[in-house]
Amino acid sequence: MIVRAEDRKQILTPNARGGTGTLDKREYVLERMPERARMFAEIRLEPGCTLGVHPHVGAYEIFFYKEGEIVLNDNGVERTMHPGDFSICYDGESHGIANRTDRPASLFAAIIYTE
Image (cartoon, rainbow, N blue to C red; front, side, top):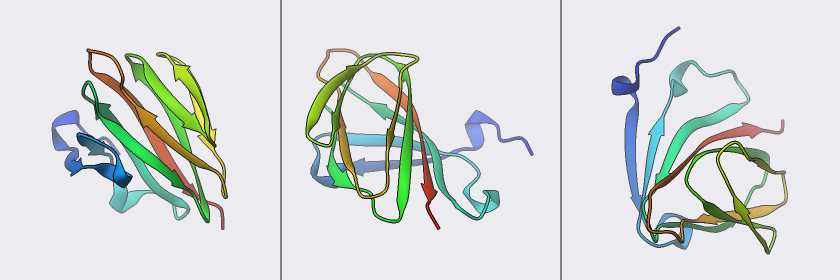
């Protein structure tokens, strides 16, 4: 299966998870994903945009940082992430992200159900 960039579904979410700005998410192939896969998407954050801190229950989320500098809140500890970095939020943990720079930033995200 092949999905072209122009065929991805764009979802704009203002104040995502209590964050600021509008999160720009481009989803990939959700209708044909494996049973335990919930989401695979590219997420773009304009300057000042954040995804509020939130828990994961019954699933974990993987981030692969693609562009720009993103501050990750990893269970209450902030870390600056750069292109090529990777993070995972396990079932029962929480995370959030923020673009505190004056340039756009992006990452790939996948949510996988634990059971």
